[in-house]
Image (cartoon, rainbow over all chains, first blue to last red; front, side, top):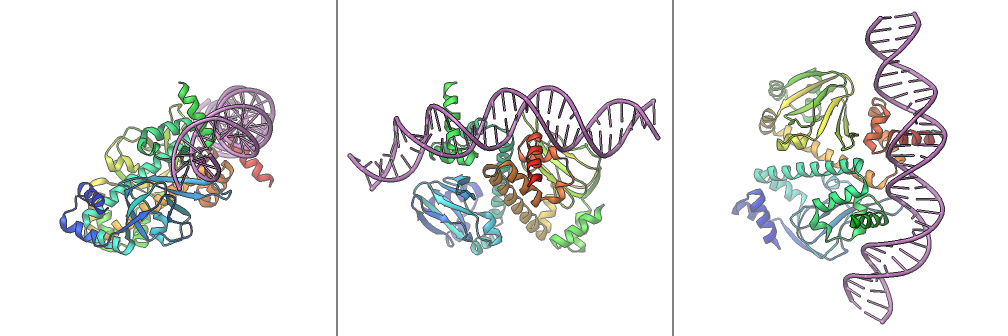
Length: 192
Length: 192
DNA sequence: CGATTCTTTGAAAACAGTCAATCTGTGTGG
DNA sequence: CCACACAGATTGACTGTTTTCAAAGAATCG
């Protein structure tokens, strides 16, 4: 399971053998079954989490009990509640597995330690965070300026891999429309 | 004008006299009149920008010509198109002044230099970016799960200072509703 | 096979957008 | 100082979209 993370760290962050070893020393390998939680609302997020295999989602539950999906994450992505992780506050979100997953956890003190001892890693992670900021900003832009159909098409073209792995009603939740509306949007779309 | 930035850097980032001096050396003070652009669509964003005085907005223009406001920024905030700044790509957004403003610009090479020579500053900026990520994630959450009225109330309670400084039709644009809808939401709200 | 999950469809109601008109306050030029 | 233009806010009537509720048709899994 660690191999996936190792080749990611070598390829994307440019780590060498020694650095890989110090990362490996603090990694916790974990398997998560479909429908299991990685993090539950109210808990504090203590870990960074790299996905070696599988697919997870992060979502919040509204006052009416409806689930609102903030993001999906698949192989070679990271997932955690950064707000809870950074501030040590209870999370308002849930993270659970949509498939059987293999993930790698690094707890916060260990991770901070890695970042300070491996500057290359810190630069890489900072770059990642910058790009996730861009991504989420684009999502705000589509939320306030595109129609449901445009948001759907945008999602398909941007995340074809995720699109064919998760149920449609979850994509509807991610896009901020009801599953019925998404269904209708799709059927109109097929006719064209 | 620099004084505002100086006390910000001392208070929030904990910089000392020497560090303040090296920051000052690369700062560009600039006044921007109401309605003037700080950045126009198509340009590359070369600067970090700290707001000493005034209020600006960042927005994108849709295919139909409608303006969609991504964020507002007031005193002691930073504003720039990070995507363009980081990647050196042309910006898809505009930034312009809603009031006469005084801003401090630091160009990218100088800023990178500051970050490497003043680790305290890098830690501080990283913390800022982390918090803006949290903020924008919360905005996505409200966009996909709250009604127009709830988003409006949330905006008022979260940004009372901004609320009374910018015209309502811009808040409507920020919230992703038409100005007429916001107007009606408000009048219903008054009756309660 | 039966149970669950997922997707689609229909009809009614709630909601938001558009277009056009009006009202307000602000500020500028004559 | 007044008149006028202009930006901003509101309202009404209409249209179009989205949600909701209920039902039923696929697909998947044990």
